[in-house]
Length: 365
Image 1 (tube, rainbow, N blue to C red):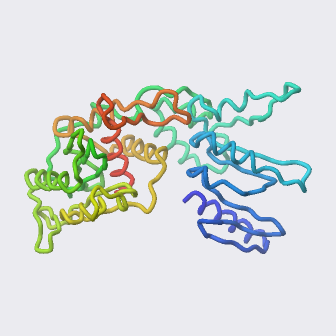
Image 2: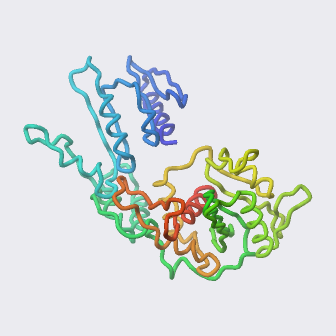
């Protein structure tokens, strides 16, 4: 998405300037060519795809949320022999105290900074409206990342991944029969996890239930799906219609939100995880590609700060605990939420927060 937006913005600027150009939107070679120059658009989500390029200028946006390998691959490709000076520009917010922040301390043989830094705050950007800046200040006011996102200062990340969560604000007793039920799935064989929420008028999301199948030998997706069906039947009165589709008491189809890999992952020889859910009666929704973990975490934070996401601390106890306590992985650079390996001792919080991320991203309330 970012590649596409950047390409569109550049094409619009060239059109406004009256400069002729050609372009390609192919995912394999997205580029614009004008005045004998070729500008290529690459993604930092897949560092291995940054190969075979020879460049004179590179602009790396939001490096703080990307692996250092992206930086190394870009630097290695700045090798155009026909130009006297090579340029490597980076723009973005510091994310923790990781590799991107440490660039400003690098010195050359003469003791000069290898990476001159121009520091700025959100409020220095003349293109942003006062309303937007007020909104961002409000959104980040309680976050440990406020100084980073508002003032551009590198800040050590501590506490929970979902720092906007407040138990007194985001928990209450919920009625499962209110709103339209929707389920979010995390396919982990030893910890098959589903959280169940209601899409309410407003709109907003109320997470009131969870179904977990824990087994060291693994639980097939079809068996776990059958448990979720019984759970919904008991708590919401949902039933299968004549075509086998699960519907709530108002006739709305029950949606299952999954990550993109679930469309192709197989836990049996004959069906994908998505096909198992469809056979159980769910209408399955997923994006073509998963959003970055960073973007989906920010999205959940937006829901929490706007009061669009609440949890029942009794019937969704482990989900509530996960959103409240999920820590960052020690030593991760850039900072990433802790992931529990199959069989690893501990609360396995990541399966629940993965479900919350999928739910918020896909419903887009």
